[in-house]
Length: 264
Image (tube, rainbow, N blue to C red; front, side, top):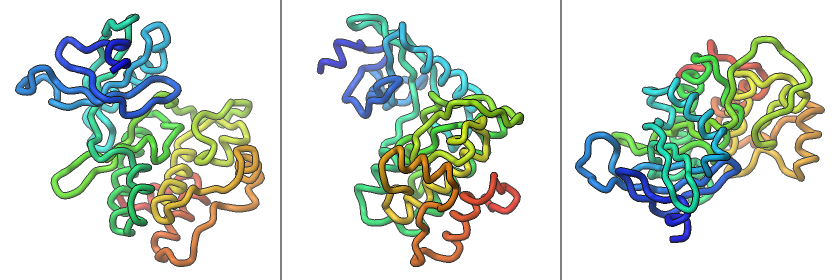
């Protein structure tokens, strides 16, 4: 494989097929050279970037180290430099064998509300851990949520902290937004500092997408941003979803966080 020779293998692991590619790095499936080793899982996800362009991955590692131990956050086992054609910085990550939540939404029939409820419960707990440590994720979306097998079902775990930042209670204006336009809150698009409330808005969009198997907004990027910032309308919430699900989505989209009213 071209990527294998270009990026190289680790001291104790072998790089396998590519799982995905983003702005800040490529993610590979990796297996241990000695599967009986107790130091690392037998199968991992390895996120790699050319070392001279790895500042975002290093930032991501710092945040993930702070969140180590959370059952609802993809775990980071460390970092390693490999040498292929050039030095490469690698994050060694927990492997989500169930793929992304986006895969689950669009490669199956519409999810049942019971399944949506399980994933949402995990995401709420993951966001609670992130916010409790003073961070804001800033890019919560189905493609950044991994499904990891548990005892009876898959657990939805939050990953990809490349755009995450420390929270700032001062509502400064003049900030450029981070993340994916489809999931941005109105205050983010208006140029205010992204805070925990913006993650809650994104969660509402993700839950709606799980329920409907449709993106929360239709139109071009410019049209969507205009509709979000004007605040005249919300993403369409169909009448056929249950009253509880409808109320939960509305709660996330109308309110700036409502932890006291949401049961985890």
